[in-house]
Length: 138
Image 1 (spheres, rainbow, N blue to C red):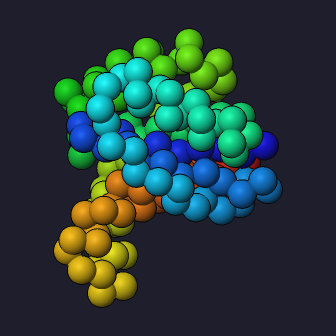
Image 2 (image 1 turned 90 degrees about the vertical axis):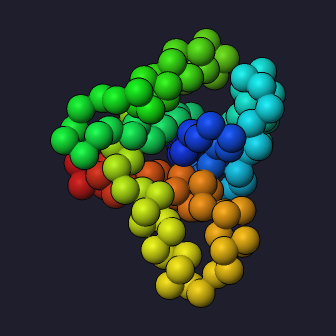
């Protein structure tokens, strides 16, 4: 069983999954958002394929820790998703995860076009890896 990490954006959803030991996160894909039904259908396919038992989704808090409009959109998405997946969905503070992903891709000397294609998937990896690391410390 694995854990799935999500980085929710307006146009895409970055997806990562853990290994079966729940030690490391790997990027799976970036879903191009077409409709909520399409999003849920693709997520359900990934859940079945990778035998996912829980989801971690990045919650974009403001820098002072408060919940802003972007975080409210994530919470609304989770509220709609929950009945379709029937598993725990955990929030993970994703402040600066996209910045960290961008920095890592720049250090890898990746072209701007290629970065744009993988940035959300990389952010999902950073979100999920943070969650997995925190669970190891418990």
